[in-house]
Every structure is written in C-alpha cells, then in structure tokens.
Image (tube, rainbow, N blue to C red; front, side, top):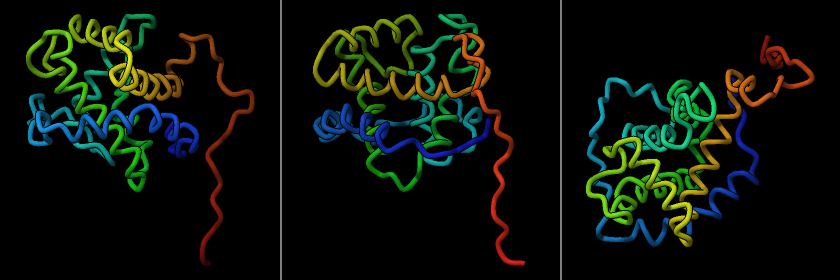
Amino acid sequence: MGNNNNLPAATRRLFLQRSLIAMAAIAASPIISTQGFAATGETSKVPALKTLTADDYRILSAVSDAIIPSGGAFPTGALDIDLAARIDSYIPPEDTDLIQGIRGALMFIEHKAPSLVGKEGLFSQLSIQDREALLLTLRDAGGDATSVFAALRGLNLFYFYTDDNVWPHIGYEGPLVKRGKPVYPQVGS
C-alpha cells in the first residue's frame, strides 16, 4: 500500500479523548518513570522508525500481538504485517499530543497494568496467555484502565484493517475505484 496519508483529525481526537486524561495522571506517578523503559527485547529486530522509540515499538508489538495474534480470528496476525512499524509510519512526528498519548498508554500497559492483575515484571515479558488475560481484565476493569485498553485496541485494529493482505479475511474486496500512484505537480522546470 505505502499510502501514508495522515489520520483524519476526528480519529486522533478520539484516541486522545480516551487516553490523554488517563495518561496525565499515570505519567505523573513517581512509581513509573521513563528510565524504566530499559530495552529488554532484541534491538536488531527493530525497523527504522519515524516517530516511535525502540522501546515504544517493542511494547506496541507485544500489545498488538496479544490483540491480533497470528492464527487467531484471522490467519494473519499483527506480527505478520509488522503492525507496530505500520502504525509508526502513519504517526505524524509533529502531532506531539498524539505521541504523548500513545507513549503514556504504552507506559501504563508496560509498567502499571501487570500489577493490576497480580503479575510482577513488564507486560512485554509476560507470556502471550498472560498478556491476553491482562488485556481482557483491563477491558472489564472500567475507568482509566478500560480507556487505555480501548484506545490501544482501536489504534491497532484501525491500522490492521488498512493492510490489503488482511482484506480477504474480513470479506472486503478493496476500494471500488482502483487508484494508481498519485500524480504530483511538477515543481520547477
């Protein structure tokens, strides 16, 4: 696909509405700090990123895999299409509010959420079964936890469904009007 159009403002507002207020309180917590984002994954697998950090990418990949696993509802999963890198490619670097909201949500999931279900350690270090169970708990918890879950689920599903390799699995045949590559005006001659 490769079409990196920005998200409509309404979609950004929806994400921000569901996560920024919750993240302001959580990010201010002295228990969680940005120094706690020590990379625990293999950094050689991190693609070139436009907006996310390597830690953001690692955590988002773990969340994406728990929400959309390979062989789950569809044969194709989040890791199969590198959904975290896809999301990164669409995030405008100048949209600092959106980036702050995403990072806050990831910080909450990585550091705070495991303790809500009696687990120690980081979300990204949990087994896939524990990650899925934790996300289901957040979904049902209400309040800030549910807002964070809903925002991250929405972000992941939105970009997952934009991948044309996923379309056959959901019964979508693609746009009615096939578009070729965009034609840009010639500048200078």
